[in-house]
Figure 1 (cartoon, one colour):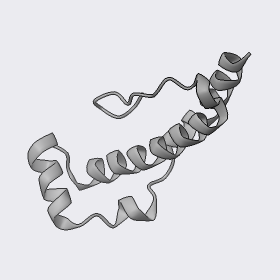
Figure 2 (cartoon, rainbow, N blue to C red):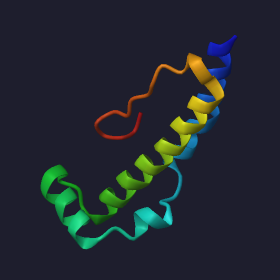
Figure 3 (cartoon, rainbow, N blue to C red):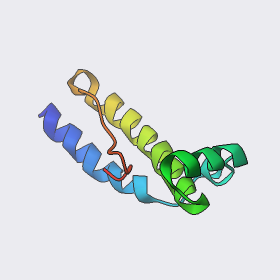
Figure 4 (tube, rainbow, N blue to C red):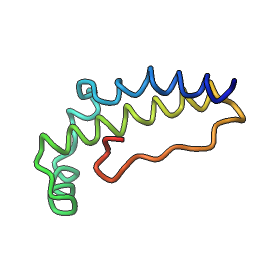
Length: 83
């Protein structure tokens, strides 16, 4: 039953990861953008979207962790940050 609850929360929350960038993501310091371009090959728009997904994923994971309690075994975000 806990697994079903966990999967339900996860299924409902994951679409939020692909929403609009948060204010924090939209105001990235130029040095961060420079580093993301250099290290990840991302332009400013892609870097902003990546950070927005990371922020949203962090919130989703925290909500799922709270909902699942001891049943939560962790989470992983793929390299491209989409799943």
